[in-house]
Length: 442
Picture (cartoon, rainbow, N blue to C red):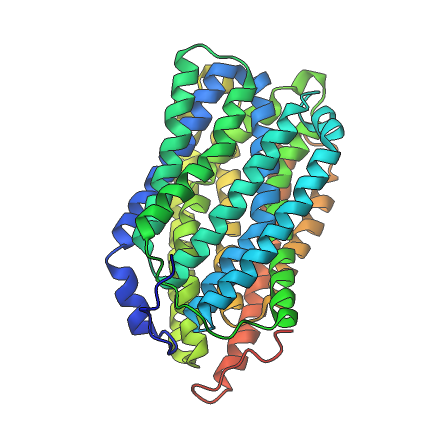
């Protein structure tokens, strides 16, 4: 249900703040619950299945989020930006949702047509995992559409409720499976695929009526599809880089390293706690920066970006130090002694790579707010090139080789996005106040 209660004028920073202030605590709580739920899911399934069978679940996790996030994060971002910047909200929602539905249809045809190859190549001859993959990807499409609307309207309370419901839907069933002694990875995979659907259903009930302005002029198809296309390219390149390491370990591991992917993922999910928290950054920062850019507030925009940079730098130092000291212990506690193949140096390298990628993702939001979607994928493309080159160091052992490639590629992405953003903020400063139009977006 769509409410016409929002004013037709452009949402400013003050109104965005008032909409979100009451719900940000629930959002933080939701993110904490989401992290806990994910770790319960991975820990319980890892212990119940063991490293060898857990590797199948870890590959599904990587592929599902690579495809789902890669295709549908642009839906989240474009909806949040358009609604926060005052574009015709109801009409924009309908058109962007139509694009997302078409994308789900195309992906569904591809997955079902290639289910035999997918099952044999990725899931050890389990074709049923292709169906699980399709259901999970469709759930992610719905989740990102709902998240975009909630972020754009500042409904952080319902945004947090989505995360809480998704966490419960992941954690409770997998604990029941593990307690029952289920050692087949397929039921654990279904839990992963269905949790997003549960989260969306609960969030939509909590958000009724949706605070989206009814009507409005629909965005022209050409600029909308161009913007979504560049955001899609950014998502695919970024998520390929973020998930390529797990897939590389599975593909490159020899007969004596069959459990390596499961062990590697167990360490990686600990190191990527900052990426869970990034979801809150995107929910709050993108609408805020989009509103500042729409108003031509170069001073406020620059100040927000600098504060973000300082916060991330401090968090990086703390996170890396903590991972070196206690990361391997956390892996053993959560996943069991069978996963005791990761030391403090490994955890420090994985955490550093994750923090550098978190910084790049955050600065990507600033680029999108400035309507420079056509440049937001460049850093990730540079990172992919660096990852492939670094991975070619065949003389090193498998895990250190992959870790080194991750850090080198993450550093390259951050350097490129920092250079681009500095130029783009300069363009904003040269515009008269209130005159910013994102010239050059297309």
